[in-house]
Structure formats: C-alpha cells, structure tokens
Length: 190
View 1: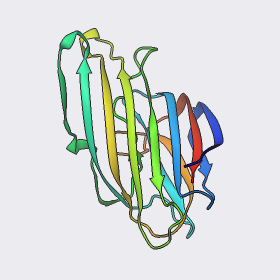
View 2: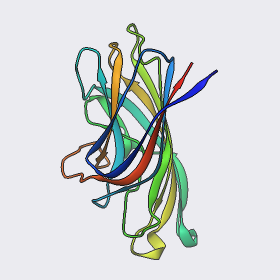
View 3: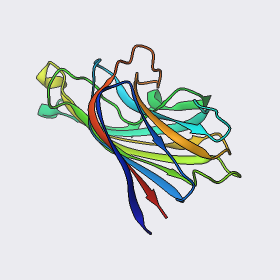
View 4: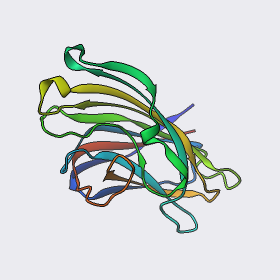
C-alpha cells in the first residue's frame, strides 16, 4: 500500500473547501484537524460531486459514538440513531458530533475514507472516525466524543470532487456559517 499526500487546505472563515479527485487511486483519505465554526452547534460535513455533474448525491449511513463528560457526569457507548443518514438522503454527511464553540479549546479532528471512487459499477463506500472536544459554557457539560460513521454514496458514477462544509447535525447547510479554522489534507492510497 502506498499513501501519497496530494493537497492540504487551511480554513480561514471559509464557506466551504473543495478537493479534486483524480482516477489514480483505489482509496482516498482526508484528515481533518482542529475544526471550529463561526456558529455554535455546527459540524463539519462532506458531500461528493460525480462525473455526471451531479452533487448532493443520495447516501445512507449509520453512526456510533462513545462519550465521556468531565467530572464523570456521564459516559456511554452506543448506536446514535439521530446521526443516521436515511435512505437516499441528499444532505451533507456529518463527520463528527459536537460543535459548541464557547471555549477556545473546542475542536474536532478525524479522518474520512472513500473506497473505489472511480469504480463505475458499484456504489461508493465511506467510513469516518472522528474525535471532538465540546467545550460548553458550563463545566459539567464539557465532553469528549469518539464518533464513527459508515455508509455508502448511492451513485455508480466516478467521484470527481469532495466538498467540506459546516452543517447542522442532520447535514443541512442552511444557517451553518463558515469554517473558522481547521486543516484538511487529501491523500491517495494505491
């Protein structure tokens, strides 16, 4: 397996970040680090553009999370039905949970993998693993979360680009503000 760093982009009050996907690699990997948003309770999310010019492709996915509040207020692990992507949902796909920007140390980091982005006979499978520190105003409400999502993009056309944008927890971009700061690095794996 060969991993090649392709592009790095840094958000600075950016509405969205686009990355071109060529047909060289069997798998694409995006790492995202230190993301914060201009509006509280928002999340980093992605969506793809395919070779037929379509964007906001229908996707389906399921979510799982582990969380731990400070002072052992609460902790748990389990399926997170509120973050599921329903069948044929064309909203953005959320990459992490959290998004409360009340404190400077609140941020989210993780990775997104998409397999066979250029296979024109199959849907495109994706997997997300992310961690976030949600720094709420009240100390007892601060928590860390490990968030995992997997699913598929219901399209057999080649993926030509990936867009990252701030959304609400359902993947809707309305009123989502901007990406205040954070870094995304795009890798190709062959």
